[in-house]
Amino acid sequence: MCGLLGGIWRDGAGVDEARAREALRGLTHRGPDAEGIEIHDGVFLGHRRLSIIDLDPRSNQPMRSGTLSVIYNGEIYNYRDVRAALRRRGVSFSTDSDTEVVLKAFGLDGISCLEHLEGMFAFAIWDAQARKLVLARDKFGEKPLQYFQDASLFAFGSEFRAMEALAGPGRFRVDDSALPLYFRFSYLPAPIAPFSGARQLEPGCWLEFDANGWEARTGRYYDLPARLMRLQSKSQTSFESAKLELRKRLTKAVEDRILASDVPVSTFLSGGLDSSVVASLASQTGAKAVKAYSVAFPNDPEFDESGYARLVAKRYPNLDHQIINVTEEALADFTDQTLALLGEPYADASLIPTAFVCSHVREKVVLGGDGADEIFAGYGTYSAMQWSARMPSWLKTVLTRVPAVRNPVAIGNPLLRGAALFHKHLRCSATEEYLSWRSYASSTQLDELGVSERGGEHLPIPERPIRSLRDLLVTDIEFNLPADMLKKVDLASMQHSLEVRLPYLDSGLVEFVLNLPASYLIANGRRKHLLREAFGDLLPHEVLGRRKQGFLLPIRKWMRYGRMRDELLDLSAAQNVLDVDAIRGFADRHQAGTEDLSPLLWSCYVYLKWQQTPIVGPLRNARFGEMKA
Image (cartoon, rainbow, N blue to C red; front, side):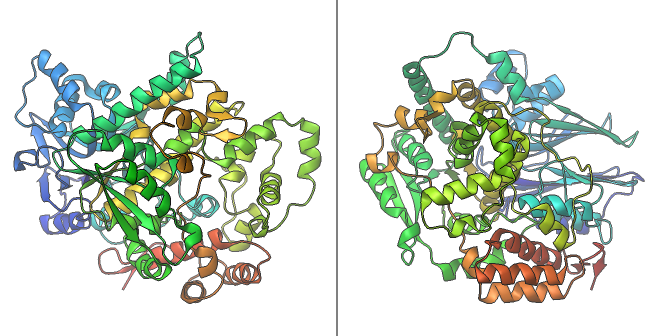
């Protein structure tokens, strides 16, 4: 995995090499192995490399072929097949890298080459003769790619922090209109970005920038709903056939992600179903032992899953099991280090423990189980919305008028707690109900905070009806997965020069599963039914029968009392973006236990810390995004 950074200056003056290298240095954590730059004719291309395929310096970047130059972040798992197909068409290669495959495929087929690439990637290709730049991002959004345009600069990169440093003081101004979305969801969904003039390239999309006309156009090369419609089979696959096909596809996806590497590949093993399946398959690929990393909470037995991980590792002698002990104190000490590297506000609190674990992985590549919940219907949200869809509209109307329980998470009985959460998020519209489940702040709370949603504000969510489980899963894959889960994986891993590969996000596998009947995924209230049945013989029954457990930070406790609560109140008093009295009121209500406002308080904490983080020396002005000493 790598980090990329670039810019085009309209006046042709470009950027001096010292500032370009200083900005690129901000991506060293993404690529500590090599640095490369290209500066000419008002164009800068910069790259930090994490060497994984073809470790030879000949595969360093920027890589050139004729008038084309590429900087690339990611891995193409089918690059050998694509290279073989290109060779049959007369293309020659001078490296063994997937980077050259991307460059030569684009040189021959242009943007249409994207349809044939299976992997996770973000890349930029500059055509010096046509003076055109093409940006592209992978199908599901595993790798980030952002860009910025004003009257004289077009900049792009893996992280906003490096782009800010490249652009220079005063150019990047915080876009206050994005704040309601951030505080509502705890992240900014693409294409929304935290700065005026900036955007995030959406998954499965490309952008072409014409430096002569100073204009950009975008397009989509991968449309999951359209793919599912084309692939939909008229004859229903039997459950037994689906189990066999899933087994074959996921095994190959794991093998592809192990074999596309010239360095050792390890695996996460949380003790949950998803990572246990991946770890068991990884242990059977090749003759070498595979390191499997698990987490133990010695002081918090309630959250400790290491016992389940040990049961899995015991079955597979080829797994070299590594246990990482985590304490609340260690996570608290690690928090500032993690937040200081954020180039944008991102408040999914599970980022902190995930980054902590990533900091202990010694290999460059690790397999993860992310994506399985969105494909196999693993979240309780899905079951709840299925129940909601069966309710008559009149009953929904009546129930939504009944006041909701203010603090459902405080209810001890799991059934009553689930019923209270179900009622809290119940809506007459399926789309509104989905957004409620994915929201951490209400419109009233946003008003109190001083970041009110504008009337008629368009949410970046596909405008399609949610009528079935498949519609719901597709919506989550397109909206929440890239902006939350995949962003977390990228941020947590790349802060520590680690590449996480996700076998469940093989596009053929995703399309196959989503075309199956809903009853294969949720059966008699049992979520991930197909996945459990397909791999039941590989795992201990204790793991197969477990309920899902999240990887959480103890922010409920931290925001009730202690250093971070006090720091939040101090930070809020020193700025004029968010309403100080509202934050104090939220903190008091949370401390009293009348409401669980920890996600909203954590979002405030992360945002205010981000505002005060230096880019290169000076600080952002908390109100206007200007720079001050």
